[in-house]
Image 1 (cartoon, rainbow, N blue to C red):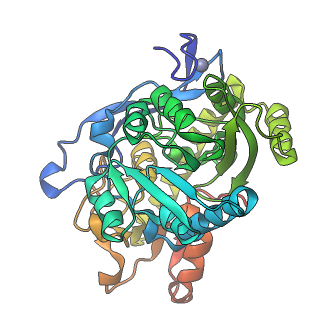
Image 2 (cartoon, rainbow, N blue to C red; image 1 turned 180 degrees about the vertical axis):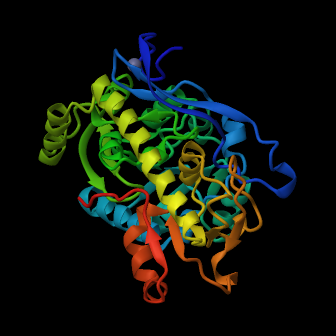
Length: 400
Ligand SMILES: [Zn+2]
């Protein structure tokens, strides 16, 4: 195997989460038990420090028909609005004709916020169903995979290029990065949002490791990738979504000075050792310990005859359930808001998904798989908490 970032062959396995199904394909009744399993193993590159999966599920399998809707969750929509306003006010508030490209634009939540600020918008989204949702709302979205070839067809440049949480499961990493370089105006800004591996590890958010996330980034290895295309990070900060996301602002090399908060984050990376192999080996040991603690919790619930439901059926929840081995023996239902997942089953553990507003009874315990929305969930469910429903968070993200 070659490193996906630097092509070195000097890689070592650091985390092994066993054989797992592709976690973003929730199963119909007919598909239950027929889903294929693939290795879920993280390799560390000794040359550039990138941690990455050694097995690639083809992008056509992974992204052709996904059912994740970013507009469903209020706090994400707020977050996208914040991003649009921030980028515009920092760099482009005086520009007249502004254009913005969103890579992996999902249901158009992000481009809508840029459109409201006067940008000419283009979304690129691989899912047929999801891109249709955006186009139906007048949010121009190309149903395709973003890569260098697509930018050649588009043949135009943008002030802002945005990629939220997609840049990092790219089979075509180098073609995509080259496409960004080619499509970015001279003084343009590429806004890249990614799972910040340092924070993921600090939060114990190992459920962010799944087949769609081929690559895991800290600032150091992201810059190693970008440098190959004469691009440079000039600002970055951590946001409390998905258990630790980083938002980095990137431009053509030498165009803008490095912000102080970026330099501070780079110093912290050095100080914690988060770019070292040992950091990941320690993480793997702590994940094993966490599994033992969670299985013990479920055993106790079973002994006390407590009815446990999962709150949310997020993609990442499947990594957790499958690695912990938590199935229908312990969890009766996964309760969702997203109607697209109604009547489906979780891959691997085959837990049925039900829709929250259709449920007439209550569980004793909600095991919160969508733990990254902890604040929002606790705030929205005060009535259940008052009725005695226990909310168990397997992962407790720390605040900034
Ligand atoms: Zn490498």
